[in-house]
Image (cartoon, rainbow, N blue to C red):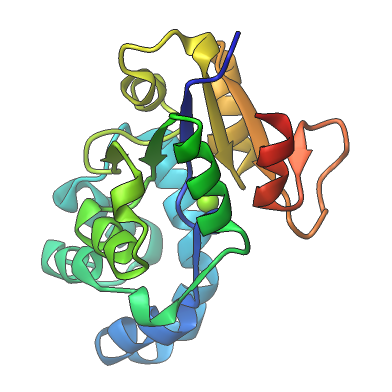
Length: 210
Ligand SMILES: [Mg+2]
């Protein structure tokens, strides 16, 4: 079936952030000597949160992180973090504009499905000047990948077979949609994953497929 809706992951698929630059600056005054340990572990902790809980919520995330880290991760810190603009540390992945222009020219519907808070993600897309390509930007305070609701919202009124998810995470962007009959393509620019996955090394490779 012809693909009509393309659902893109944001982080490390469209934009890649140097977290050291922004999050160390945010955490260091609060967590002092624990900052290095935290920076090494926060990605894994958020991954676990996203697997357990259906959405981001300041209070729930605060309790989870206090419990997991023993640090005073207050809801106020979560809110500050959620609003932290990472744009100054963002680089756009190669071929983003080219592939978005191409898909738009083919009249495809483009969606962003990302797990972090909209307050940061939407502004990052705007600052990168790619926000207007997308019909919708779905963010983590409403539903988290790989929970079913995230994909059901992203396909909207389209037939699941008309949709395809493109992203860099095997659990969230690749296996998650497939469970619900939605095709997915792994973005694996460093070619670290098995060729058993349907994958692309360059985003512009989408032009050959669609
Ligand atoms: Mg990603």
